[in-house]
Length: 125
Image (cartoon, rainbow, N blue to C red; front, side, top):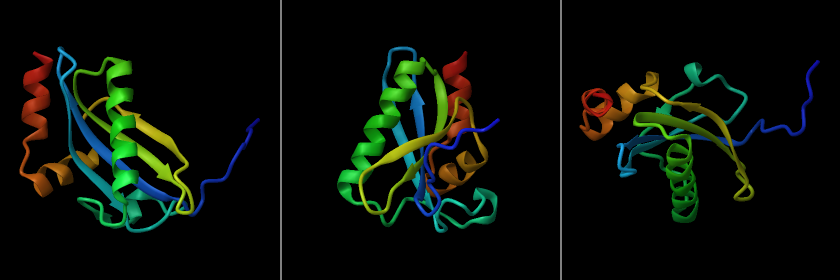
């Protein structure tokens, strides 16, 4: 049995790469967005880093949420948070939280020059 409360098809898909240490210091290394809207599989979509269509308010709203989520979950190391963002409002929902390096972490490392895997490994020791 499945309960569908709301469709997010057509919303924008964005994600943030976040690093947090044991002292609750947190940094968002990179944010990215899919070229295609929700409804197209992420693996079949072009990813742009850093995002190009988010407004300053949207960027900071999602960044603040990412930092709060990572801190609340107690994740130490690297984390990837994926969002769906309504293109007509500032409504959003979290699609997925990966408390580890993900496929897009490699793209974020290349786009920023920040060694996510190395930093995550050091923080886990």
